[in-house]
Image (cartoon, rainbow, N blue to C red; front, top):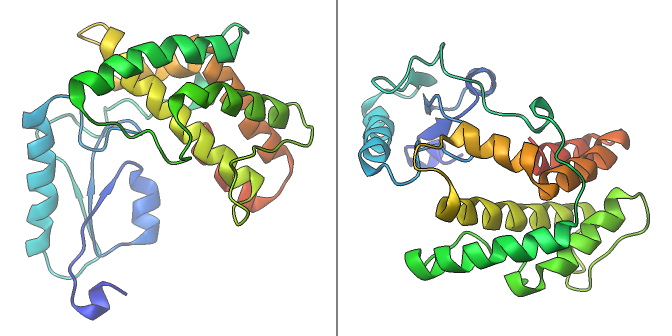
Length: 225
């Protein structure tokens, strides 16, 4: 519809097979894991190369055009995005206490960078323990709800919002404590394989998948992938 109105569009793809089926007018496939469409955090040179390659597709005719990013890695040899089921489950622990500990590192990140992607729920990070209890109740199969869920938002969609805020806080906090040579794949393995939060989010997603509802399965994919 945007193209029909004369607005030229370009998208960046992390899953080439899906993009090939959807056939958008112009798309650039990048061999990076989910959450890093422009490459390594803090690598401005790489991010500019991705942006330049994407904008260069504006000169391509109306497609579909699907181009591979060149000069970074061989897309065929690049590691696949880390799926949450591809790593061992983290040892059970008190997720709420873990969240409180990670929040301290996140506060340092925000102080240093002056920005954050946390905020989709509208709930401040100092109250994320309540979000954790809500997700735990949902994963356990009971009737779960949160007092700040908007009336026009389903419990499952709000659970996705909560998961997004928690993952964003953890990943930004990780940038304060990760080894300097840690790759995005390493970070994903840490989140899903070494944190209690990763185990909880997989439990939430599993309840949604078990429902058999296609809409809930799509939400589950966004929560734990």
